Image 1 (cartoon, rainbow, N blue to C red):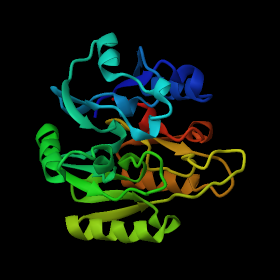
Image 2: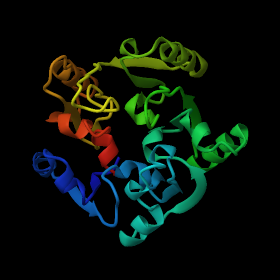
Image 3: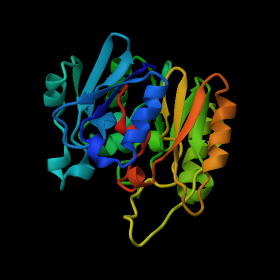
Amino acid sequence: MTNNIHVSELLKNKWNQFDIFKSLLNKYHKNINYLQNTSDIWCRDYMPVRVNKNKLVQFRYEPSYLNDYTHLRSIPVDVNAANGIEAIYADINLDGGNVVFGGERVIISDRIFLENPNTNKKELLQELERLLEAEVMIFPSIRSEITGHADGMVRFYNANTILLTDPSIEYRYWQKAVDKFIALYKINVIIVPAFTFKSKQIDSWNAIGCYINYFETDDLIVVPQYECEGNKDAATLALIRDLYPNKTVEGINCFELAKEGGILNCVIWN
């Protein structure tokens, strides 16, 4: 993980907690860079995927969920050119938020197949493993979740252990699919708290209640907090601090950000 942090310049005016977040990062000597020529704040998705110190892979960014919102779709080649970023370009439609690295393994949700309907599944997986230089593990997505991104459901604790957002609050079919994933890859699981938040004033595709989309550097983790009814803020902070005793773990209110459908990992490229 690098301590060199990038966010869309749009985030400064799109997130009411941004100044607090910036001060928090400054406190721990983290440098923020502002990406130019972006169309929305979710830079994790349209920026290249870092495979190693010297290799960036830029996937095609044409998510189906933005078919009716093309004005919000950043153009990777233009963003990279504006920010002096060089990458290997791949003709696979894949959001960066759907790529969760764990050393020699990488988790990608099965939404990858829906976004590349004309590509043979076996050949697609082979090409992904070649580009990412890792074993690709296909994780079940939640059908009703608009993006199907893996980073809203799971992340690696180590090569043989995943952190999994609490499946008990999700659909039974998804719980069964996750059980099959765990058995197939013979992987250990640590459950991360989550809760469901519903409001007539907030769109149903909000990300309020998801904690696993936290932000991590070499020595710092920033965990979403919601400070609303039903929250699991304290329990999640305690868990992450227990799991990472050698890192500083801080929390920040992400209620307003999550209303828009994403959280910390979504808005940061590092």
